[in-house]
Structures are given as structure tokens and as C-alpha cells.
Image (cartoon, rainbow, N blue to C red; front, side, top):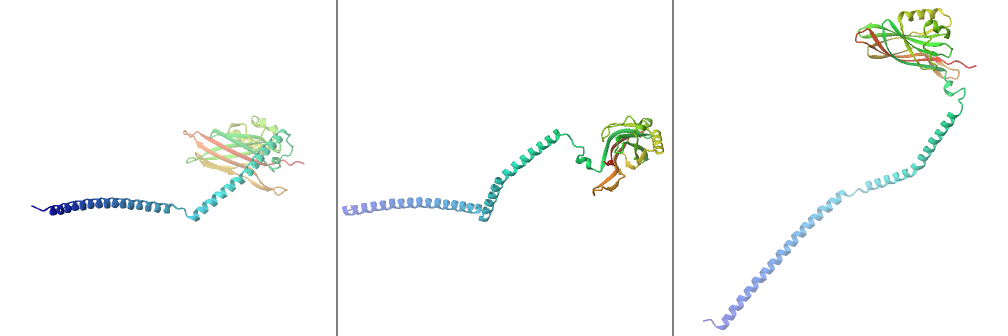
Length: 283
């Protein structure tokens, strides 16, 4: 049997050992908690490092920032300057409208700027189906000489899908119109207001009569060849210089589109004619 002292010693050692064990468990738990906190702090440091790197990469270059600021300042300055010119443009437009209204309300002077041109232009735009033994006539304008000007277009089959169109530009006195059968084409202005279809033989008779009649004149007889469905242009012009030094041209400029019909019996002519004649000189 053990003595009381031995028992006390054994109890002391047992208690001490238990205390040491408890202390070890406490220290281990504390170290584990601190270790977990350190790991979380390391993670946070990594996150902050990545965020810092991102912000650094996104940082605007100082030179680029200065350029953007200067551009914004220029834009604001231009906006500030845009107001007055816009108002001035609006005021100028309103003044132009008022001037045009005043000019329209006043009688037109006898010598307009448009009348200062040394030429007078006459135009015709006609579309018609014409047979091979027929001719298209248009015009009838009153020219500066007081006569009437007509244009005859006579097509001819050139073979291989080609068409030849000859134009005759004539000037005839007013008193000859009835005898020539042209008194039905007499526009008041410089643009055509009608056209007609004549037999080719009738056109030849008109041209022969014009050659023999004093005061009547064959101005020009240009000819142009064109493939069916295509367009061609012919002109017979002369260059002049007015006493004031202004350069101008006179003569006809004719555009023709000729399309042969499927049965090849007719041809559709689309005519765009312009005849420039010297303007009558005022004394």
C-alpha cells in the first residue's frame, strides 16, 4: 500500500499532465486560428495587388489627358463662336427672301441680265415613233431674225441594228408657214410645244422650196449614226467673241436615242435638241 505522500505526488503529476495537455490543446487551437487569419490576409493582399495592377494599367497617360482636355476646351470655344455666324446666316437668308419678294413685286426692266447673253437658246424634247419613209418635225420657234426655226429628223435603216438620223435645221419667214404645211407648230416661247410626222417626200419638197425662196435658209444638216437602243450626239457649232470680249458658240446640239421596233417597220426617236442663235442686236 502506497503512502499518502506517494498518492499526493501521483495526483499532482496526473493533474499537471492534464494541465499540460489542456495547455497544448489551447496553444494548438490558437496557432490554427492565427494561421487561418494569416492565410486570409495573404488572400486579401493578393486581391489588393491585382486591383492595384488593374488600376495602374487603366490609368490615363498624362499627355493623353492633356490632349483630351485641350480638345474639350477647343470644342467649347467653337460652340461659343458658332452662335453669331448662324444668326448672321439666318439674317442674310431672310434679307435675300425679302429682296426676291421686292424684285418680284416690281416691274421687270427691259434689259435684264439674262438678255445680255449674245445668244438665244431654243430647246426641243420629243419622243415619237417614225417610219422609215417618214420624218419628225419639231421647233417652230420665233428666232431673233423674226423668222420661224424648225428641225426635221429623218431616220434611215443602216443595217446590223444601226440607224442613221439626219437633222435639217431651217429658218423660214412667217408668211411661208401655211404653204409649207408648218403653220400648226408655232410656240410662243423658246421651248417646243408640239411636233408632227411628215412623209419623207414632203420634207424633200419643203427643203427644195426653202433653197429656192429668198429669206428662207437651211441652217445646218448634221447626221448621226446610232445602234438601236443607244444614244448619240451631234453638234455643228461655231465659236464667237462679242465686242465686250465674251466668248460664245452658236449652232445646233442634238442628242438622239433610236430604238428599232420588233417588226423593224418603225423606229422610236427620243430627241433632245438645242439650237443657239445670235441674239438680235439692239440699236
